[in-house]
Image (cartoon, rainbow, N blue to C red; front, side):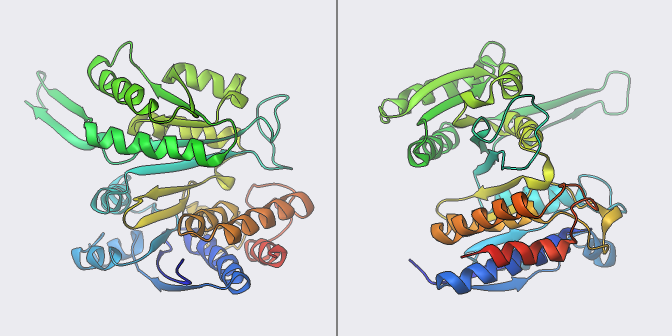
Length: 353
């Protein structure tokens, strides 16, 4: 296992730099205690650069990013930039160009974190969503006919390939096996309506399942998944789904685990460069006030080093977050935590052992 990793840091917009600052503080502490190093290089990408130069993600920067061991990303989104411009130009472009075909979203309720679901606790909400990240509707295939006229037609096509589905499902099966919990994989789709794409998904799922006899499998429509997230979240271990359904159900997952302030995720290319980020937005109204909750960014850093192979250090960070939640934090809401952003980072770093 390597003891040194080159990490590209894109702090992002709004409160993103404050969150990433605390994440790096925690990561540096973990690296020091567990005997590895993170060589971080900062990249100025986001709304301010776009407004200043008109550039979003230059080709030269993209080429450099392909040489790193990982990318640590803050929130993207600027109030003075048209919504979607930065998200498509940075987030989606990196996912596609770096072939980060797995979007990995742990949904885990930590102690002392409130869930809106009555009578559910940490033992009930602990699963992972494995979302296909480079196909589906997000490919951007389609177009307009007679745009701007009363006869206008808009077509948006979902692209699903056997290769893309198979590699995503194999990652999901491996995740179910390696988690060592229930070893159960649920396929989330819509086979009763989206007959072509989901026929391919289901056939591929059933074929690969034969290679994993130790993993239980089942299937549920996406609308049923949404109901059961609320009613019976304890049913789930690992869920595999396509790009758009995954985008939707992971936001619901974030809410039942306590909100965006505790939700982290990874955009993963198991054979290449992966990118890790907090799920929440840039929260520009809190910029510079040292009051935003940094825990999602800290957990994203833990997910990054876990993916790089530093599992003990990642576990130590997660345990330090749990101690901070149970001993120090009053709320996950900005300004109501009982501590500043930097103090939360100090507390988590102090609990690492």
